[in-house]
Image (cartoon, rainbow, N blue to C red):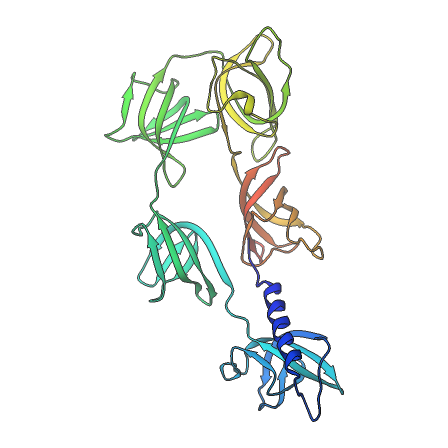
Amino acid sequence: MNKQANPRVFLALLLAILAFVLAAGVVFAEGDVTPEAVDVTFTGPIQEKGPIPGEWVIGEHTVQVTERTRFHPAPEEMQVGDIVRVAAFPREGKLWAVAIVKPGPRPVHFRGKIERMEESLWIVGGRRVIITPETEIGGDPPDVGDIAAVWGHAGDEGVVAKRILVKDAQPRPVRFRGKVLAIEDGVWKIDTAEGERTVHVNEDTRIVGDPGVGDWVGVKGVLLDDGSVLAHLIVKLEPDQNRTKFAGFVAEILPTPAVVPGEVVWLVKLPAYGQHSEQSWVVHVTADTEINVPPESVEVGDWVKGFGTEQEDGSVLAKLVRVTRPPRVSFHGEVTEIPDPTSTGFPKGWWTIGGVHVLVDEQTEIRGDIPQLGEQAAGWGELLPDGGVHARLLVGHPHPTQP
């Protein structure tokens, strides 16, 4: 999520400066004028920079600057037009400056995939990263496709990197089963429990059993950047006319007969979202079910997917179950509902974007300005049991998209 400059840091600095001033017994004018508290704080551009001691005009205020006014950085490093923060107190009809601080660049830290590399510019996770002679680059040798963690500060042309830590991208192994929908020019379309997947084959792919369109296959391979799969192995499976796929959240753990030790029964529900309609299944997990976690560790709210054999009562006897993170869901459109902008937690809370209920919290990264009512916004996140989305990324687009 966007990180704004921390007001606590500025406040702590002002308090430290004020403590020094009080201890020193500052002289602000003819005679001793010792402030009991900082009554006024404000931020604005330096309009006029007078002598010291003398008058400065900052924003809409004229302030009295003395030899005891504390500066950060030094006053000679401040120019007309610079934005500064001022702590002052009123006395005798004037504002006396206790401290004038020019905020430093906003620190930035994020992680993403290296998409482009030039001598002084990288694109990391869609963001411009400025490389300077002072940038420290560590970890693995950098290359496009690797993962980079970036520390730096916001600049006019992008993030000015102070330090970059690079980690080689490792192919993510995947394994799944499904029905072959199409085969054309080395690209297979396979219907799986998660939906349709694109599978690429090459001269290194091993294909067993001569599968064709309509056959069930098992696939092992690695996930590619675009979400498709490069297959290392495709095996034709025996057909199962009663095979039923399921994918959804465990909504309830149902009681099981005592005569079936080790059996677990779930009510699995898929909420309506996108092009998906609401569905539900009663799923039996037994000692014969292939599952990637202990069945007794699965809790209500977990996302499960798999397939099995449909029973006479309509329930599913699971043959394969995978417990994973919920699917990634994108959203975009007009912002029609936002949390209370005056609340201390804003922008955290529930939004409605393009008709989708979106939860924004501390795990959400906000790029650009915070979207306002009536503006366009987009992003992605994880599906929630009620059909909403837990946003991981929210991007504002101030101007509505034109048709």
